[in-house]
Length: 97
Image 1 (cartoon, rainbow, N blue to C red):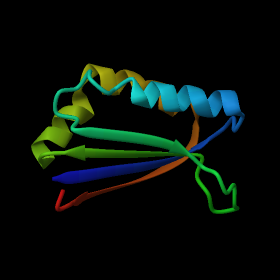
Image 2: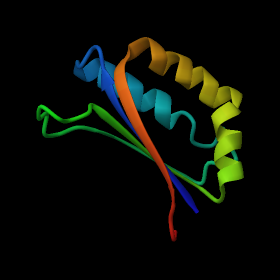
Image 3: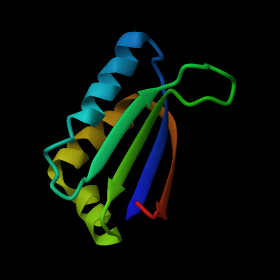
Image 4: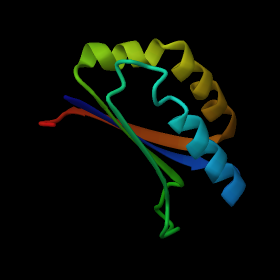
């Protein structure tokens, strides 16, 4: 399995903006067959080092994650993210399950 995690800082940190981002990301569920698991959460601590939104996804293989990266549904959400994010970080790693 492959795990893909993205943390986002948004320009607008309002509850409405956070929920819109969460909704956009969760809309990928069911649209991309190779996406085996998706979870999205918003920060609850609001510390100086916190990010606003976290995306946690799972794929069977690197090939599947690469398919996800270029899938039209992902690209559409990615365009939205580029408009509203202040910054982001990501990590991809092999996992047991």
